[in-house]
Amino acid sequence: MDRAQLWVYLAEQPLLWLTVTLIAYMLGHAAFVRSGSRAVVNPVAIAGLILASILLITDTPYAEYFEGAQFVHFLLGPATIALAWPLYQNFSRIRRLILPMLVALVVGSLVSVGSAVAIAYSLGAPDQVWLSVAPKSVTSPIAMGVAEKIGGLPTLTAGLVIMTGILGAIVVSPLLNLMKIRDWRARGLSVGVAAHGIGTARAFQVSSVAGVFAATAMVLNALITALVASLLVTV
Amino acid sequence: MPAALTFLLTFQLVGLVLVSVLNLAIPEPVIGLILMFLWIHLGWPVPIELGPLCEGLLRHLSLLFVPAAVGLVTYLDLLSQHWVPVFLALAISTPLSIAAGAWTFSALARWMKLPPEGDEVKQDG
Image (cartoon, rainbow over all chains, first blue to last red; front, top):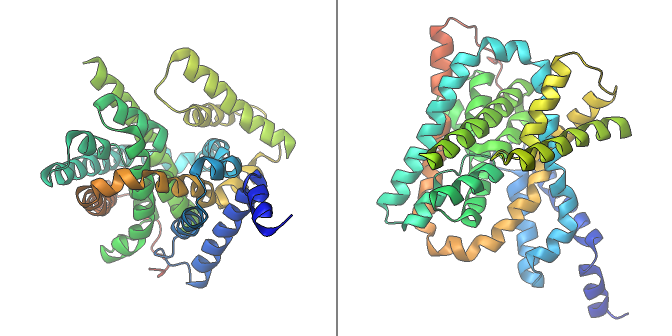
């Protein structure tokens, strides 16, 4: 087998892209740890950039990459369910705070949708595009469903959701340090509302309390958004 | 570990069945999460390794988003056509939303005289 044949053979194996995905993440994670856990050194962004470059350079279609990466992607489902565990362990703490949490969640969510739509609309984005921007802070399956119902482009929304998550994970610590908001609960909750699972992953990196509040906020935001969206459609 | 994994996946499967039968707009892992939470909360039996499995999955939650992040390449065409309004909308609204949510929660917690948690914030930037 010469080199070109070997590449063709390997590129078809799920093993190649699964392993490369893990290596890219390990590099991203190592960079994150080496930087002293700085938020700007985001492992998802680094791994994503490395892998996207490899796909572009080797002219590999995303579908072929996903044959291998799907094993990692699949675990998102079980990992979401696994959030029930820390939620259970911190339930007494969450229950006491349900009122301020719900208010902050609604405020955060309205600011997210309102400001994003206002900016995209006033800068002249076509209808389909600003409608696709609206649900960007919710976890992707719900965001895509909402986009479809209100007349946006679900695939564009899926991309925007990921970008929002990475952006939120990067800005949350510097921003809230600047605002002198030191409360882990407030920090976790706000990033869970604004930046869904990627923000939640970031929150767990920093503090388990922040992670639990981020997870709760993400789930409640998903449920409320799905509810509001289905009401919108029936009206 | 197999017991805990089976336990977790069963909740996801039940979630999937409920979503398709009831035609719900909510993704099946979210339903699974709620059901598993209720199960544990009611004090029903769970596999011993459930805690370690869940903690293990969540410790590297970021990893699981990598394939979706790579998927951004498939949206490059769509994004590049409208990148100015879209990028500005995300870059401004995301920090704004985080600031609004965090500020509202802290203000309410202070008003309700709930003690803060986390004065020991790491200076990690």
